[in-house]
Image 1 (tube, helix red, strand yellow):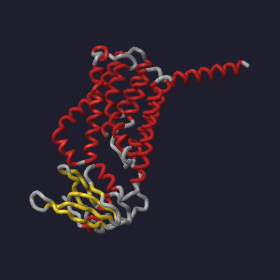
Image 2 (cartoon, rainbow, N blue to C red; image 1 turned 180 degrees about the vertical axis):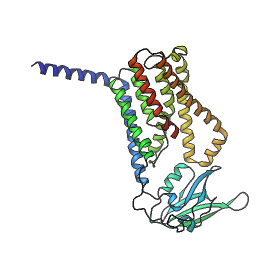
Image 3 (cartoon, helix red, strand yellow; image 1 turned 90 degrees about the vertical axis):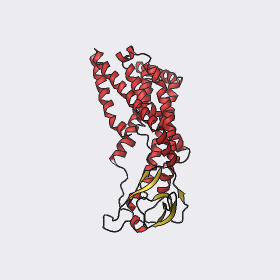
Image 4 (cartoon, rainbow, N blue to C red; image 1 turned 135 degrees about the vertical axis):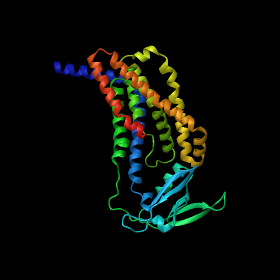
Length: 350
């Protein structure tokens, strides 16, 4: 009878805890953001696995690069590893060709103006199937002539590599680890504002590198861009704010208590800029080139501020370690310092 009473009391306590959870907006915010991040990670993985099985442009002997806002052929491989002429060589592709569009055999012509068009066009190419490359070559001082080049098929490799170690670690495992950790911390201590801040910080870490592998459909691609820009842009600010306050206000926060409030506008400005910057590159290489020439200095300043907020967070963490007298807190802070330093490779790769 006693054990049943204790079990009933435990069940009532769990029900009461769940009711307190669902009444808090934080609970629904964490579930909603966490669920959206998980959805996009799954979609990105599916897209990458699908696109990785398609023809890789490097297999044809072509290397592309941006030159003055145009997608250009920067180099041509003349021979394959077996010593045969490369498909690019056989097709007559030349270094310096301006890439205009591509078409699969019996397929529509896909024009390339920006990164989105480039990704969608080249992921339509198939192994064991010829395709057509349309390029522009100089014809006079200010004009170019269009050439249609037929590229012979490339034999599909027996076992094409699907996932590299970098993709597995930085694009799959790290985001999932950050997402799970953030949900665990935020939901188990839903009433703690610092735990909520830590959960958002781990969510931001899931977008440590906002670059998109694989192609998402229209609508989903733009939604992912908005979410990635928002989370990535707030990463350094959340990092700084958390260590200004955890486990107690740091000496830096006590000396400059308004610092975190004044810098709160930065992630908003940076998110808007990153969205505009990435979207412009996605729709038009030419527009992005003009944007880079006119406003590249502004992007550099924002990047420096982004890094500076991380440095403020590290400084606050170090000052907290020095000022703390509690051995358990010092041990936790050292673990946090080691974990934070371990995220630096993701920041550099991003």
